[in-house]
Length: 529
Ligand code: DHE
Image 1 (tube, rainbow, N blue to C red):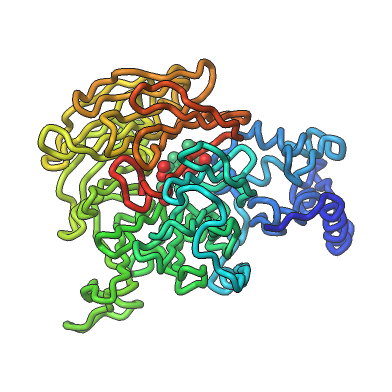
Image 2 (tube, rainbow, N blue to C red):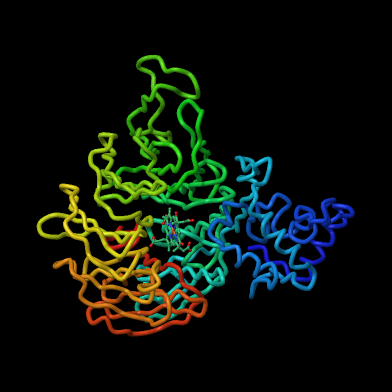
């Protein structure tokens, strides 16, 4: 990862300044010229086009989730333990405000990131000759946890038996979404909001390769056979397919068949039982499925690259886009365990509610509307057996409740009260309890609610007064539940999953999510995949 010392950065900044020639940071109007200030002070780290260099991208899409006051604070004071210096001693309050406002405006013309850029961005470390046949650390590789610490952009690897950190390393800026494992659990792929994919060797504790798939990325998926990695981008409107060494194979424009409308790609999921990737599009009413099965049936969808197909001619089904038309865009999904059904939610319209529907991926159409009280976060829910059927349960971002839905009838069988809107619910095959957070609500953020999967009733809670508790993942055997104390000086808290008592607390920097190798590669019904 690029890691220039601060003097080198300052020299780079001065060089950029010298090359740019004399800059006037004051516009004729008397207002600070934010564009000139940016080129003078920021471009050497964040890129002349704001697409990021060793510093993160500063595009409206990248800053969507950062509060304006936080942007001002970072420009003034810098960011601790990073190369971002504070500018309060060099820039006036008006200049800082002008810069903060300006970086939220779109870059015109819009920055491009094509196949050549993706290929050129790839960084790979040659494999050593002495490939290990087992991990170089002593712990069960199947009970390993990968913990993403958002506070200082690091990843910790945790022994899931002893609850000890095996290694800690710097990640790309702002990882988001679940890291994805190869089927043998040896390699893990991380996706950053700035578009970087990092392949990491958990056995050798080393980065293998990195590539920038887009300028603003949502997530990555790894195929069930471990051969393919797919990235979903907001910017540009595209998907990028890589082989397992992060060599680009192809990109897909996220556009309608006639090319008239394009879309941000909300997310891509691996549907292992179908040997395909399933793609959620934010702006166009279609679900895409891209098969990585060479025997996939051909695709007949009317047009190929603008040419109308003659009867009997079709695109090959392998690595090509099969479209399921919808009435409205569904921008996120859950799947049932068979991956035959995608359960999608639509964003709430102004003044309206979120709605959800079930799409049968074989019939390629909607088969039911779903009763949900609010928009769930992606990968937030779980499935489990209940009363002779299988149910899906998920918290939602709309209010304090978990919706439980029968997956045979697609009817709501229970609404379980929680202290507030929550992001994640987790369980395990070997525990009768499911745990959920209420991290999006003032009253509920300090509480995790424990629900009995048999009675569908809350039976207990754990609490961290005044703090935020979130995102649970179980050990491989389901005996312990690990939760995040989601604070800058936070912790990973290990609870006994039967007694709900705290067993251990490991200090961590805002641990966002944690991912157990075994639960992920076996696609446990109690967690996301
Ligand atoms: Fe996430 C997963 C989208 C905000 C933490 N989030 C995902 C996934 C998507 C998604 C598409 C599934 C990808 C995967 O795992 O492959 N997230 C979104 C949003 O649209 C939303 C609401 C707004 C946004 O701007 O992105 C959003 N997400 C957040 C947060 O604010 C969270 C709480 C903190 C953060 O760091 O961004 C957050 N999202 C997470 C986590 C996962 C995730 C921890 C993985 C959960 C898992 O267990 O798999």
